[in-house]
Image 1: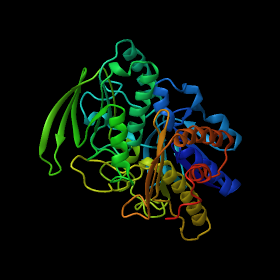
Image 2: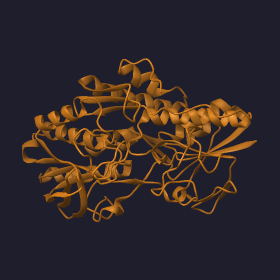
Image 3: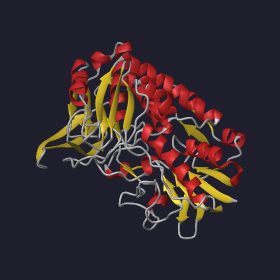
Image 4: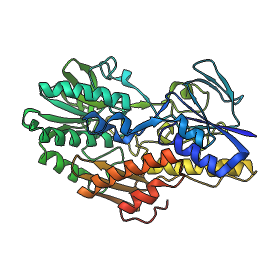
Amino acid sequence: MKHIVVIGAGTGGMPAAYELQEKLGKTCRITVINSSEQFQFVPSNPWVAVGWREADAISFPIRPYLDKKGIGFIAQPVSTIDADNNHLTLADGQQLDYDYLVITTGPRLAFEEVPGSGPQSGYTQSICTLQHALHANEAYQRFLENPGPVIIGAMPGASCFGPAYEFAFILNTDLRRRKLRHKVPMTYVSSEPYIGHLGLGGVGDSKSLLESEFRNNDIKWVTNARTTQVEDGKLLVTEINDDGSVRKEHVLPFAFCMMLPAFKGVDAVAAVPGLCNPRGFVLIDEFQRSKQYRNIFAAGVCVAIPPVEVTPVATGAPKTGYMIETMVTAIVHNIHADLHDEPATAKGSWNAICLADMGDTGAAFVALPQLPPRNVNWFKKGKWVHLAKVAFEKYFLHKMKTGSSEPVYEKYVLKALGIERLEQ
């Protein structure tokens, strides 16, 4: 019996395990390895950070749900991957062999690239994990007792800008509801070359729409921003011209600051010879398969995707939920084909779809394909997006608890956008 190991049990790993189990049945043994016992629904973290969600509303213990499906589970970090010998060593010393390896680890958060950043040893908050969002909420509650300037944004090398915009608008809405907004100057600071770039070179009217929303909500901004250091209550930023020259040096005061970090690949994956690019992201072919090791597949944020364009300050391309969902399905079909000595044919989508909450409204964008020029390129705003994201949270958590393999993005998100199906 072949053994398939999935590393990571997030929004890519859990669906991968369920789809593998449904597609391959009892012909393979499936084991999920995750550093934590808990599943966390990361898209809801901005709500957690302002107290709109409790931790137990967006997380649950993984083991009981995988047990029901006959899927093995080990809650330990992976310390080393011996890809030549199909062998894993876990942090507690356990040894594990595999026939196929599916990597869905997500990123390592590279706070060390900006001195003074990060919630553990620095001065900035993060919403990249549930623990970080809870830490941010604690800091936010202290901030509410003595409000002051707020900075929200993304560091050089960041690739997922949507949550930064979401958090800016959610925080803005929460402060208005508390009648405190007039005491809080807000600034959005980002490595993006302009507002609404999103790591995608802009999508439809995203630039003008988001600039307008910032103006309407009294949020100032600094783009082409190379954050160089964070001190207690101060963000040091070099603003860059389009030609790479320095436009201005900023020392921005803050009483509360949330800055998304750059991403890198997790250490155990990045250390495998020939598996990753210099940033530690897995190099894959069009079938989600490692270019170096034919029995290793990868999906999600851990995958190497080139930037959409060169920008004065480094930015990466985001991996949205719809992309991850289709990557996972492609992996399952291609492992099934390999087991039957058939060629790989399934491919993940390079279409970007996102529902971004903005507090009491929201914005949706579709970039088809993600890399321009595009066949579909639009960005729209409305209350319906906020409602759609709330509904999507419910549907996705239900899927993770029931072990359903239905395509949530295709069934619910595309339907909300009035789209039947997106083809490459």
